[in-house]
Image (cartoon, rainbow, N blue to C red; front, side, top):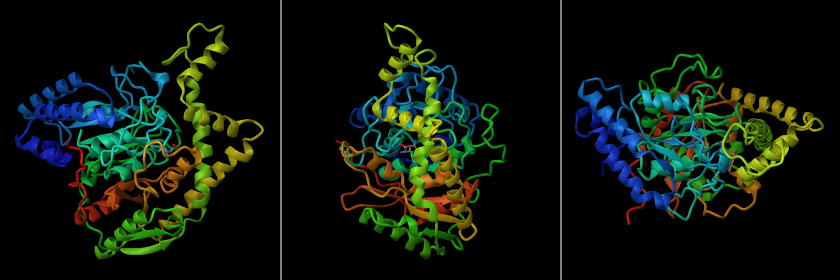
Length: 486
Ligand code: GLN
């Protein structure tokens, strides 16, 4: 099947004239049609727009004007990134029917690179969650076992990529939402350094933590996508004005001499033994590839979860104030006055997890509690960042599990605190602003994928990708396909 090709291979076949964008897009749309009922990965498919973009790509290629590796390749977009003219809900009822006037910068850049955008992918409501179960449109399902979660919040992106509905997808990551679903679906996900990719047009959750990034089946594919996404943006002053390196140039340099940090704090109790075994196997694999393992300490790790859930909810409570029933989306009917309009529109439009977080965040920011919670959390955030600064004086990357557990059954997580604990390994990286990547490193006995996380230095996505690629070249899981065919 042509959709078993990696993105890089599909680009190669397009370049060689062995296939066309129209052909790839038709096959992808057919597969979405056949499988999305089981996976609920796509919330919306733009078949007409995709076929039109494919026809344009083929025409460009015919004129000898192909734009690069993404030209003509079908991709999916997480539904918290604005797509001009195409409904964008962020997984929330409050934005049902909202059609943005513009593209997010990341989306625009993919279009400019010639990519074919198939449609919008499911997510936890406003990207708040780790299982896709807070989506107002029902959870996406894991292609490896459709009774289980694909992770979250970019669960639709991960499920679509793993199920070969598209060659790659955009996700967003505030505390792990690209990496954790990548781990749970056997795919590769990269959260770039905060500021590497523009957040313009990303529906804001927690702005100091949010980052847009690629998800795909291989490290190389993520590198190709990041190449198109990275760089400054006149519409986002926090998108750093730094040169964007060539992400594929050093990809094959191997792991000889690489110093891999192993943080003691990330290998404690509470971890699934099969996850631990797979990640320890990956550590041995790095040694065999010529890397050196170095024990590092990130002593403030134990405060990261509390710090994150104070800051993320505080920022969310502020960001989500814009959904007031006046300017965006859902508006309550038959209200008496402005106060009731706000209260009822928000009560009807937001789901329970979003409401919980708005309340937590409003509390942390309130005058009587600001110093004890918000301000304290900001100080601890600095300590967590300093832990990584110290570690990166000794090592080039830090390796850990991505998620303490493999994909769990939908409906299993009933206690919010339990689900917050799933982010324990991923969110320190967001607090520090560092780039992090998850890649497959094995399977459990029940054939559920296991992912490992590599965290790199600030702005060193190139080094991070090369470190990941070194492992992937020796242990390629990208050919393992989930058992979906009826
Ligand atoms: N699970 C985390 C949360 O709910 C992370 C979500 C994300 O990265 N968007 O906040």
